[in-house]
Every structure is written in structure tokens, then in C-alpha cells.
Amino acid sequence: MSHLIDGRTLARKIRASVKDTVEKMSEPPRLAVILVGDDQASHLYVSLKEKAAAEVGIAFEKHLFPDDVTERAVLEEIRKLNERPEVDAILVQLPLPEPLDAVRLVSAIAAEKEVDGFHPQNLEAMRRGQPFMVPGVIEGIALLIEESGANLEGQQALLLVNSETFALPLTLMLKGRGLKVVMLKQPIARDEAVNLGRQSAVIVTALGEPKFITGEMVADGAVLIDVGTTRLHDGKIAGDVHADDFKNRDVWLTPVPGGVGPVTVAMLLVRTLALAQKRRGQTSSPE
Image (cartoon, rainbow, N blue to C red; front, side, top):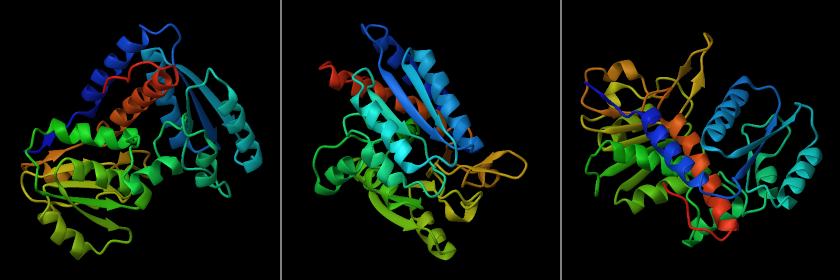
């Protein structure tokens, strides 16, 4: 029988820790989120972030723009947020409608306020082996892997990704925990994924391909971290892992929903708090 890694319970613990710290601050951290367009999933994700921020006492601003907004207008809004001393953290909700350039907009955020951890300056520090801020989603994945309690040092981790930008900090995190990392980037040959998957103690998938990971790909005892989420025609959310294939298998699995998502939102709060403390010369936040 598979073992579910409960992201919701872990996220509650993280939020409680953040709340305890925020309550001791004279001024709460402030997070500003830029949301462009009418994408239902993006609006849902931002509403979940807003709700979580309210729970822990972090001030939250939502800056809404229509689909046809010019890039210049969004850049101007980012400039204003950069200059406001009371704003500690800024997030541009992705994906963005075309023709907006996500890299250009994220690059415009002041590095000391970019909360996702994918600012070009932070990515360059990763590449150079310099100190960097671990993106919240990556730290969340690390915590979820730890929840399995498995001894993974020296074993293989397989990454199935659609973005090398996402894979970079994930690879560094896993190597830092003693794993050997193999990456496959879309488009992925299924035979190769099956072969490497069977040899891997950890599989992290972030493809956005529902039910791509099937039972034949996974060895018993493996840890499956499902970052992929896709909204199906019936409105349900599906992950990359075909969960039904693992009901009677000895594997560790993050459910979708209820796995990576809640922890990623919780880590956004941790990172917002950390940026606020750093800007105010206070101690770093708990994780």
C-alpha cells in the first residue's frame, strides 16, 4: 500500500511557525502579487496565497491587470513596488498571457524583494557556486522528501522537467543531500523514463502531463514528488503520477491536490518573512 506524504499537514506546521514569528514583529511583512489576465487557475492560486497570508498575519496586496495590459504598464507597477519601503516581497504570478515576457518582468523586480527565488541574479549565483536563496518550492520539495524518512544518501534521483530554470536549484538541493541526479527534459522518450525510473530512489516530476508516471517506471520503496498539475476537462486537478497504479505499491507519494501545492504556498510565507527580516536587519525566519 502506498504511503501518502501529507502536504496539508506539513503546510499547517510551517504556517504556525511563521505566525508565531510575525506576531512578535512591530510591523508585519508585506507581500505584493501582480496578477495579469483571467486565467482561472492563476486566480485560484493567488486567492490561496492571500488566504494563507491573512492566516499568519502577513499584509497582502493584489495588483490586477487585464489580459491586454502593456508590458510597459506592468513594468511601471513593478518599479513603484520596488520603491515602496513598506513592501518586502514581490511576486509575478505565472503564467503570463502573451506577449508579456516573464523573464523581463521578473528581472525588473528588485533582487532583495523577489520572493520566488528565480530572479536572474539568484540563478546566476547558483551557477557560479555562490550563496543563493533556495526557491520556496525547492525547499518545500526537500521537506516533503524528508517526510518519507527514507535513507537516500548515495542513491539516484530522477528529475522529469519542462524547465531547466526549475531544474537548476532542484539539482543543487538534491546533490547537497547526497543524491546522484539524472534529468530528463521534455520531450521525453518513454522507454528512457522507464529505464531510469526503475533505478531511482527519488522521482520528482514537473511535466504537466497527467498520469505520465505509471507503475512500470517506479521501483518499490521510491519517493515520488508530483509537482505537475493539470486541470482536466471535467474541472478536476490531476498530477503527473497515475496514482491508481500505486495503491498497492510500497512507495511514498505526494497527492495532487494536497501535496506540493500547500507546502509551496507555505514556503512563500517563509520567504516573505525572511526577506522582511533581512531588509530590517533581523534574524532569519524559521523553516
